[in-house]
View 1 (tube, helix red, strand yellow):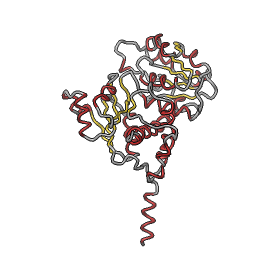
View 2 (spheres, helix red, strand yellow; view 1 turned 180 degrees about the vertical axis):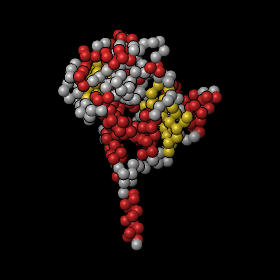
View 3 (cartoon, one colour; view 1 turned 120 degrees about the vertical axis):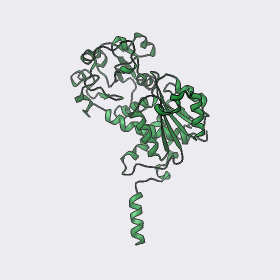
Length: 343
């Protein structure tokens, strides 16, 4: 009976890894010491840091394939999702990432919180400290707020920018690059085209800063009101005609039209946008034969990209972006909370 009992217990727990089974210490680059405690931007990320994140994410991605998706890497750690802006995909991704690593995850509902009663960001920071937060994931509709929060919190609390206004969305850029690299290992001189509402896109900005570190040939494309010529100052090429932009492209990233951010009627009629900028199989013939297509989501099907192309796994990496997003966020939570504790 004892053997049967042990066998039953082992069967039920065989998918739950012990910390040593994942060799967390080996996840770190032996020639690189991780010291970063916060991730607010891709601008100041070093290539060694990016490679460490990707190496860790690759190791942790195996968790998503298990029957029991749980390892005790962050057991006893507290992660707080502080979302001042509506989000389903990003918040759920961070929540799952934290839970898969066994951390205690709490979602702050701003609509019912003290913020609605006039609480300042500094007061919120004090609340987070008293709650024993180890990491705070913040999204805000005003650019720069995560940076301000970082000024109010002690260094032992990690902060991750999950999107601030039209400024940056660093974890999205990291998961995009992580996804691309699985299919295009070397990005040096490869043509990557970002199409859509560039003006209001924090995803575009974070991707530009990150891709430039790897010698990528970056092209932007969109309607003139949503892509001012001043974007040339970012060190990229600007196009207002989609066919010109995607010619011989290795990777095309199409963005969602962010109508909620547009207050001056910059957006053209949707049928006009579809005619001029919607990505389709027909248009894709202008790009490289093995071109890959991404979209940060949520997709406006038939506006930015046709449903047929979005679902065609010969080209589309959109589904991979979702699963890779969890892996990247697991890696960041682990590295920022745990690996830098002694730094």
